[in-house]
Length: 165
Image (cartoon, rainbow, N blue to C red; front, side, top):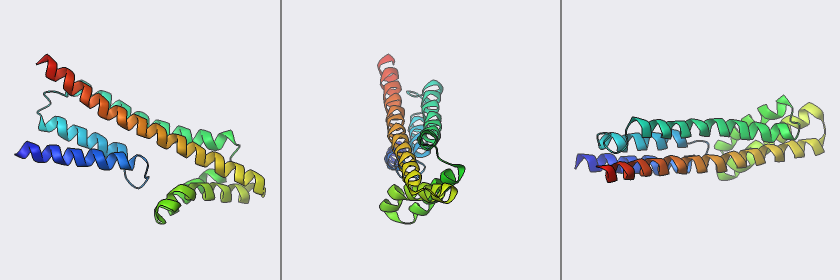
């Protein structure tokens, strides 16, 4: 009965984590890892042990790297100023309080506003806003793929070690 509760909590953590991979207010990858770690612990690390958890952890860490690089490269590719990068960060944070439209448009508006203040060119500001937003979109897609890979790795280790036992 106790293990069933742990597995239930693990499933909830993983499900909320998957949602969190696209919503910046929820630490998606961290919750997925916590859920998978809890499931492994509930099983006494019989099916998913240290090696499996290290693989899952590396995939999770890679998600943070990809998230940072994709958004940065999206902005840099279109010649964003440091003020535009700061604007994207502020716009993303402000967007958290404005619901889904704020999450989608906050980084774009922030980057465009920062670029406009820095260079006074509406055309360049729009270009930078779009480039930053596309970088964030690519980062979100990559995070979802890596999150799914974490779950698939857990299932693969579990299945492999179940068959071997």
